[in-house]
Length: 177
Image (cartoon, rainbow, N blue to C red; front, side, top):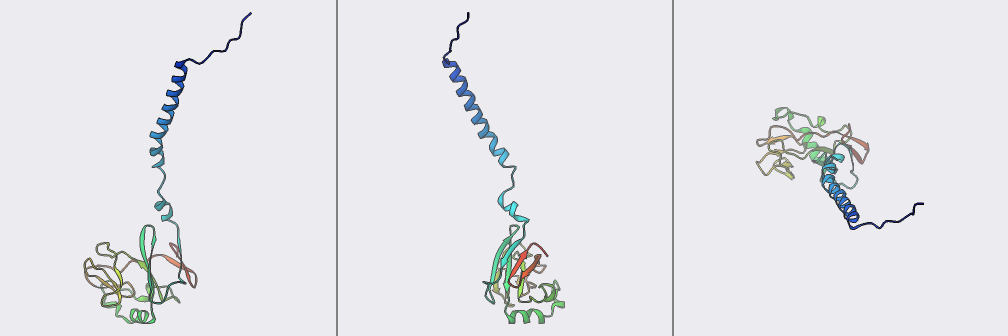
């Protein structure tokens, strides 16, 4: 007949278990940053998605800056004077000729949505500055009119247009046309 005996864990068994547990935790701590870095960061995840902007709070003459795809975007609620100035300017003689009507949505001429990056060195111009009451890049002196067209300075092109559409009279969706 055999007797059933219960063995007490030896000190060596406890050390094996503790060492194994510590090795598992250490391995997880070392591997986790490598696995985690494979995920895209929050800016990348949000980059491709359209951005909805409520225009209702913008007063006439106000310019706001929003970010879409990590790029600053100017949204300008132009005054009637700015719209008239942009529409009557001799655009054919400009460095990068483009009529105001090609830079705004029909029926929404008071809204201008353009990239906020200067086309010369990538600076961010300040609004309502310069000879044309548009944007002025203080880094090198380029001046854009109220339609974002280059008028003076070394910048070669107009402020870039951004794809957007109106979803209501006071809402736009940047990133879709």
